[in-house]
Image 1: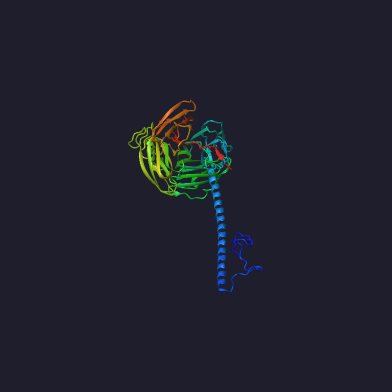
Image 2: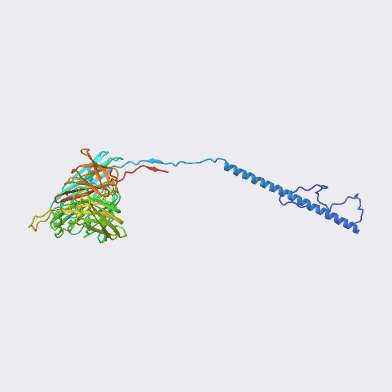
Amino acid sequence: MSERDPEIPETPDAPGSPDAPERPDAPESPDAPEPAVEASSPAATDVESAVRDREESARAARAAAGRAARLGLRLVGGAAGAGALALVVLAAGLLPLPELRAEPVGEEIVPVAAPQQRVCTGSALRLGDESGQDAGTASPIGRPAADDAAEGGQLERRALGGGGPSSPQLLSLDAGADALLSGAQSQEVESSDIDGLAASACGEPTSSAWIAAGATTVGRTSLLVLDNPTEVEATVDLRIWGEAGEVSAAGLRGIVVAPGDRRVLPLAGFARDVASPVLHVQASGGQVVPVLQQSTLRAVDPGGLEVTGESTAPATEQVIPGIAVAAVESTQRALGRDGYDDLETVVRIGVPGDEDATVQLSVLPVEGSDGVVGDGEGGGAGGSASQIEVRAGTTLDVPLEELGSGRYTVALSSDQPIVAGARSATATAVASGDALAAPVSDFAWFPAAAPLEGPVLVTAADGPAPVLVLDSRDAEPRTVTLTDRETGEEQQVEVPAGGSAMRSLAPGGGVLLADADGIRASVALVGDGRIAAYAVSPANPVSGPIVIRP
């Protein structure tokens, strides 16, 4: 049997061919010639053995040659295939490939702007009536004087909740990119239990507001008023901090204010005997406009009224512009009386976080006022600075001493977020020799003011001698343009670097501020035994275009 490749079968060689295998068992032809030498002889045996050896060697050589040939064919075929594959890969790398690119699918949507809204809080309130009956119900006292200004749309005014002139008033302006809206109100009350001047800006609905004002000590009544001008029910959570820490009380969570309605909450119902409260009002669902009304009654003598809107949210930098200090001599004399200690000018600082705060407090006179700090001079000169430590989760009232009559700006810088406001008071002189006569006194709360953005309308509440104070924290002087809305007259106000300037306003009038980005502002009214104030706030931003993608 000849050798065969295990993979490629061979065709058998024809008999007699050079490669034909030996057939030792084939029968011999009867006519075949006899060999010349007999097989049995030694010579014949040697010859036969040699022939067999040569034939086997030839067969082995032929088999080896066949295997080598077949292996060569395989190697050549494999090399040719590999070379062809390499050529295909090289050609694919040289040819430009098609570029597939998909543009993102999306549509730009410009939200329909909602009308701008402001709520003027309406009449001053007392618990019960003048006779003291129905003490659980807030009753309105008299009517406030409200003024407003609008540009860029149609202004609509209506009483919130369908009430009358003493109810909160809702101002609505068809919104637009350039629409501006402002409002303010004032009310002087003279009654047996409440006596004073209150002024406030008409507030914008919000979901979060901070207030640094009020007290619930003996004779001090603070009412938190929540107005909901939206068409959605508002659920309010209230947090209160005081000098002893955060207040824990039932009813602080889940306060419901119906659409177009209001809630009036006596602060003493949550926190009694707190001298320096700071509040955080947080609403979900609908938005609210919160204000805090405080009135003072010393025994049987009423001692002031104020309505305070929101301050700026906790931050490491706070500015309270234009604190008015009036009738210093008579006010200092009244301070010596029992129960009159809250006539002192103070800055209230609240630290709602978990870390103690180190606060740098600076007091500077407003340029153009007669303010004097200690031995310093007014007109922007002089001033004082101090460092205050306030414990985490508490509040502190810091007295501002040695201030002469005038206007001042307080700047605070802290290593922890803080909330701030300031209280100032005034009192009239008492006739000498009349020990029983009580001075006529009043107080005002000045909230920390937020930096303005873009043009801003300012409405001066109706009352005694309103003054606008503009403050800049910039390193360079600023020029702000004031345009009177009645006369169109323009005036340039130079605001010093890191300082404040002031301008008188017409009671009930309005001005347009231009080039006022970053400026902080407030309005204060001061008269004989009367004082009130409010901050000028920027409008909440209008929603811009958005892109919706699938």
